[in-house]
Image (cartoon, rainbow, N blue to C red; front, side):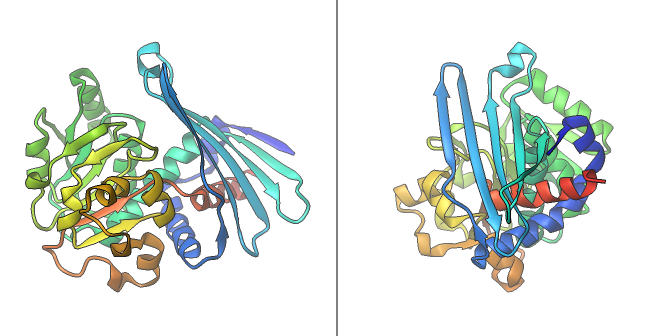
Length: 315
């Protein structure tokens, strides 16, 4: 058994290379080739935090993976990272632990950003003039970086609750080559962007239905636990395509929960991203469609990225 720290993992894994692996993982998952038990969820109120336990195996593969990832949202004020976590990689034939990936949540951030890029490839309009980023946390960075693999657009409009964090985000991403504009008005962002990514821990809707223009794609990332919500449920009634990384998860603790509860969405309308990967005709077919992707995070993503790390690190 070998132990790898975050620094070694960062050196070994190319985030851009992860996107295709995540797309293939979604295809395998939807095709029934992945064993993924229900997600283990812990929620804390004081201080607020979430812990996700995800695990599974691809049938016929040589490994299984167990991942623990946490998000404690007041850590920023303590000078600590919001996210933490690790992955354990096992030999599926013997149960032997092969590697402890002490990535401190970095691999989770990478694979989540990659999922956003997959969603944008399949559902966003071909010609995007501005990308809207709702949120200023770590995943707001990873989502934008991953979108390099999905769109040529480099103009961004960003919104956040805290002006200081918003300006810090804008400065950091500008240094990475993005043309960043900030706004305190979410309606301005939504009205001016046709590719929008929401990455907040909000527990009530941020984006209103009346702000969303024809031709808009929204990737909702923040609602990955019970009680979280970023979108007005009426958006689902207008959406031409509603996609999810996992229908079972999205209808249990994702953004889709609120669409179903309000009657604006029927579960039969939800298509999994893996189905669109296998048959792109199920994705966007015209520039005026409104599309939504609900990302809750699936264990197959952790399997795929852990395998990539192990292949690069084992020597």
